[in-house]
Every structure is written in C-alpha cells, then in structure tokens.
Amino acid sequence: MNLEFKTGQIDAQSILGIRTTTTMDRLAEMMGPLFGEIYGYIQQSGQQPAGMPLAIYHSMEGNTVDLECAMPVSSPMEGTDRIRAGELPAGTMAMVTHMGPYDNLGETWNALAQWIESNDLQPAHAPWEVYVTDPGAEPDPSKWRTDIFFPVRACS
Image 1: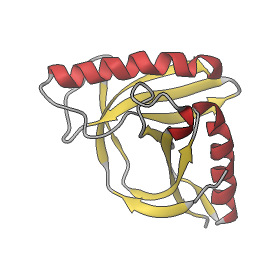
Image 2: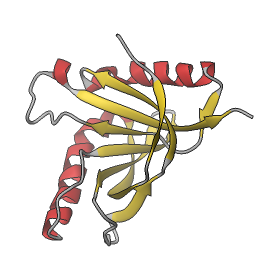
Image 3: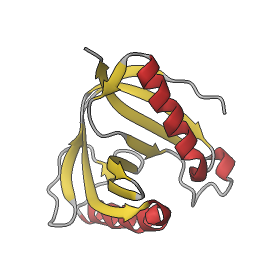
Image 4: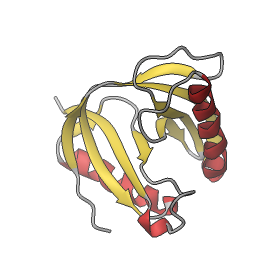
C-alpha cells in the first residue's frame, strides 16, 4: 500500500445529506440507495451535484457508525425533513487517496490516524470520504479511488 499523506487548506462546500446510524457490516448496502435519493432530489430541484458522493463519519462506537451520506452542491439549497442542507468545513485537512476496494479502506484510515498523530496534529471535525470513482462505471475495484479528508489542527 503506497499512501501519500499531506495537509492542505480547503474551502467550505455546501452539501445535501441524509444522516443515519448503521452497523459496519450494513454500511455498503445502505449507502447506494441514500446517494440515489439525494441525487434524485438535487435533479428534481433542477440542479446537478457539484462533485462526487461523500460520507461524513460523525462517530464510530464499536460496530455502530453515525454517518451522513451527502453530495456537494454549487450553492446552498433547501433540504427536506430527511435531506438536510449542510456544509463541509473550510480549514486545514489531513488528506490521503485510497486506491482499491472499499474493503481495504480501514487500513488507509488507520495509517492516516497514525500519520496525524506523528505529525503533532489532532482531529478538529468529523472526517469524510469522497468516492471519486463510481463503481457502477468502473467494475474493477483495484481502480476505485476514494479521497479521505480529516479536518485537523496543531496540538497545543
């Protein structure tokens, strides 16, 4: 696994998302339908997503995951009771690109967490994954690209 870690500044990004709680073993099966629901809502509003789908990981306790499946939009949009308008924060990010199947993402997350700690950084907000490659368009999992963004600040 050849990973390149870096930090960089990013701007805030408007999103529409659905927040839910699930277990790790059900994560993959539930994300697709949620992304489809958000995409459909954006299209019904006469717009297109401003980027690829993403998942914000608010917390993980044991096997339980509190996450938000979301899509970026070019400008703030009104949501619904279920699809909420939000924003990815601006600021300093620890970033890494994962190439390969989603099953191996845990290894990349662990390596990123170690890199953050060894560089005297600490988490500042919930991290997220951007699914750059659409598995429906690219059947070879070894070619799937997932970008991970982890908001950080210097340890005081």
